[in-house]
Length: 72
Image (cartoon, rainbow, N blue to C red; front, side, top):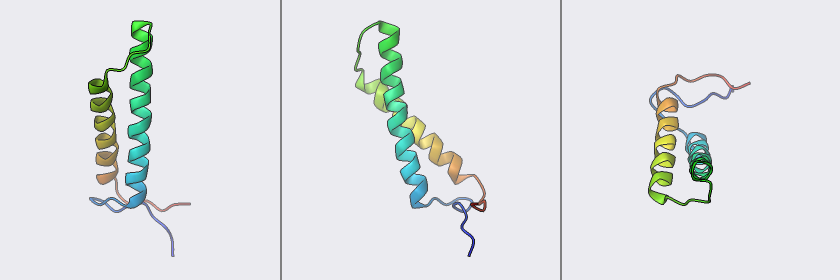
């Protein structure tokens, strides 16, 4: 049986795990970008979590509307 990615308009566990990884990475990049702009370590948690959640939702949305593809 050949493995495929999740079907069109459905998500699997791998999609959620990768979405969580994207969310964490985008939160870290937001923190670094803000700190570089202000020349000091800045923790604006509202901006960080807004960016992280938006990135995670965008990733899951992309996977939701992508048709299934065979995995090599």
